[in-house]
Length: 261
Image (cartoon, rainbow, N blue to C red):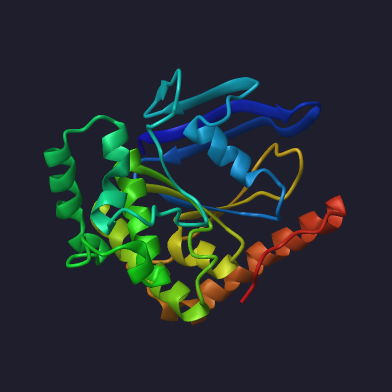
């Protein structure tokens, strides 16, 4: 599998405090990888390194097999909050990263309109954020991230603020979008079920400083749907990830936050 993003012996510290030490990771083209672990273990730091918001103190980060001088503007990032601009319409919010890149207005509008149906937003292009449900706002945010980062997306707990029913609907919707677009995605979550349902691999991050990820392959067939949560194979994976998290917490003596539903 062709490498999309790789960390090679990467280290990063905040002042004197090491957060990431000699960490290596490889994400393949078209993979969906979930990161799960307690708060403060370094998940968001990895995302900031991958987007270029932070620079490693040692090691190299490569995109498409090539070391990049800067990753800024080359990776799509979707935070927990949608951060939509209330004075801009759906189409205008989605087009923002293209505007920043200097894309011609006609071309950027054309690209946004082309993708609206896939994101369930056709007919809503002239609506403002306060006219949208929470789930629809997240769709706009994800569309904006897709337009910002080409085919590599980093999703930082994108559905954590949604109610349970909407969250499950959005998970199934995201599965369908990923299958159609073939995008490479990394997802931060504290929800074990969400991590399993969406991913090809789950990486358990459970120590500080972060030196390695414990990989759990998700060999469940696709397409997946919410009802697969009750399959014996799914339940076995949930138990395995929960056990790893509990064992690591006991070893470190640290408290963390995650959900086993």
